Length: 415
Image (tube, rainbow, N blue to C red; front, side, top):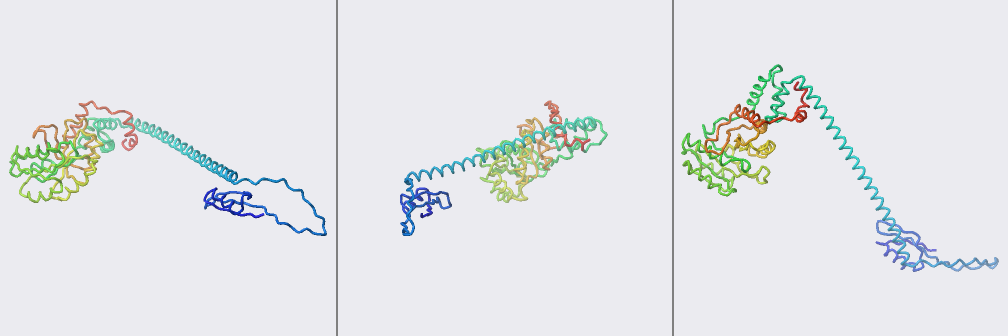
């Protein structure tokens, strides 16, 4: 018997090699997959005639029943069926493993969700116990925390203010001290622009009132000092009619107007406007998430110390959006901010919290569209008092559950 091994890229090539070498009578003994493809072990029986011994009688073995060798097509089919069965087994095993992994992941996710839920429940219960304990031991502090929350003050800022109060104070005294503390932490610049002049570029999101604020400042300066030392610059080539709007303001008060197509031209223009005491620059408005914002702010920053940047913010905007705006416009290095649309705000505590935390001074406050009447220098005590008064007028009320969640963690420190 002759045994050989044949390797092919697939089953048909390997069987073709068997047939060419051993012929159609070859018997397939085994098949297996290899790195090179398929390996077949085949054999063929070719008994040679043996010489008979004269001394011993000849033994005639019974002839075995003839077994027809498998045909080539049948062998291929059988081998392919074997490999198909093996492939099915591997696929089924992989599917079972994948299903087991998915079940494990689902189980872990469910357990994680359950643990988070239990943790939230536990934290809520602990916060409630701490808040109830604080309400019993320090009722003045808890009442003041409630009122500051109704004003719209950030919870961490409110907790800092209450923590600075004397331990033995009645509610009226505590309120006065809290307002005084807030006023001391809120930065303002005073009326220095209209008193001393300067070179100021107003920047900020679209629609916050940059151009209207510029008009109010320009008219106020002209009424106080005359228009001879005043110059207006329009760097807003994005908004339709922006240049014409600034030109109209200049014609109204008799001040010269200069226009540039982009903020990069502002520093060069400022070098030619040396004699003017007060220069106001109107810039394009854009969203705090605009991809071009960083580039425009970088262009303005090349002016260096000869140009002061002022961030214009609308008080009617939500505190979260104002916080994002302050962060995005930080590359402009604003020295102060103008607070507009104060008359449209439902609450002032949020914006005052953001500006206090950012240490950004407020220069002027605008609360109306009249030019130039609805503009006044920012005063800290006045702004804080307005925030408290607005909360009382609007009937703001702090939810008890909100108070427990906000101040339950710091209740022990406040008591």
